Image 1 (cartoon, rainbow, N blue to C red):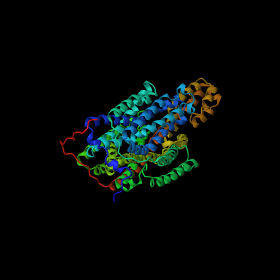
Image 2 (image 1 turned 180 degrees about the horizontal axis):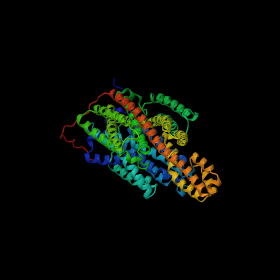
Image 3 (image 1 turned 135 degrees about the horizontal axis):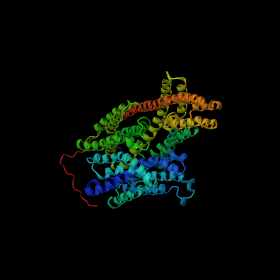
Image 4 (image 1 turned 120 degrees about the vertical axis):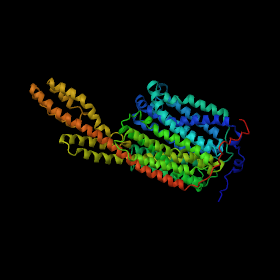
Length: 627
């Protein structure tokens, strides 16, 4: 049954078909500007992460470290569906230009955070950065939601997949360039240029869009659903806050704060659904969910969002804590995944344009993704890096087709005046999936890591001397306390840091013993950073034992036995941490297999809509109007 068109559909039916009226040269100029703007938004999510340690140090704001990312995430995700609807009502060009302008303003202000002339605005430099990052997210939401809809305005259905593939590849490319550029700017110039670099690129994008892009209006005339826009913000922001704070360990999942945020979000969702069902031009038309392509596609996008971000996040943790890659290089260490993603995204778009079908390619991709997650679930502490690379490429090839082809499917299944809201809604569900998936997988990792550490420490104690067992027990207790943080990052410090500092302490102790300086030994024994067993041993050395050469030799002999125990324990602790991290992260990928299979089943439920095809050698029709 066909739903009646919304108010203004008569005007929408008479809208300009820009895919036919614009010449290819103009389309490419517009496409370059839009791609550049989208690249800025995607790059900002990776380039800033590299600079954050230096920023937190300079602005003295370690307590607000996570909020710099959270503020951006909140505003970006919450506003995506609103921008999509506004672009349907007022045209893509004004909304996109507004978004880029706000993003550039936010970037400039982020770079100025903590400068003396801003004084104590918002309470200090780090809080200024948090606020301005939120402003950046307000602009970035327009870039992410409107850019994908513009493809449907500029190109016929036969050509959309190949260009959607380019847009999907932008996100993969940014994950490679971001860490490299962020590290270079931070180390060689200033962390402020991590934000300032957006300005010249953004102005270039604005100039291309302002000079060559038409309004790209849908022709729809209706009132803005301001109440719906407000309610979706009140639904999204508390939900994301609760998930972020719960995953970070700032609040317990059962705390009144988290439960209150979940409650507010649930009430707002009910109110939003009530309002949307009665407004003449809702922010998110509920009738879209009667469209099986949109409904099942939204479910699949949600699941893919969870799997995609989880793949990158947990691979980085594995590379740092097991393979020994530095934290700074962790972003670039996932380049093989990005390469596979780009090949899968662009290649699937090209193939879809030739065969006129998208569903088989999505299903093949999700099947490869499930296989990629399965291969990652076999990771161990002894997996060679080359083996990790092959697994990353396989996963990237599987996830790549989903990014452009789901967008193409949504756009084919809706009316022209619904393209903006449908495209942005798909993006919204994917971003929500990323946030919820990160929280759920993070909780699973923390629980799994605690179990792995306990089991592996107990196994490491078997057959060891009492002195080594005592050291392992102490490190096990420290690891149990530290593993409750965000994603369990940190238990490694309980053992390997002690072992690495032991050589320096050993030299100090030997110097004090050989000189017979009991007072110096007493001071060393008070150092809380030393292992408890070593501090107790130093405290029990009597002063008279240092009075003779024979006594000093005996003390050094006993201490050497303790050093040997600590060295043996340190090696075992390092092994335990690596094995535990590998096991916990492999378990996350076992859950990810299920996520990929659920996305596969959701895709199976989608109709297999056909697309127009262009025969080999057939040229794109000439444009009717030069703009």
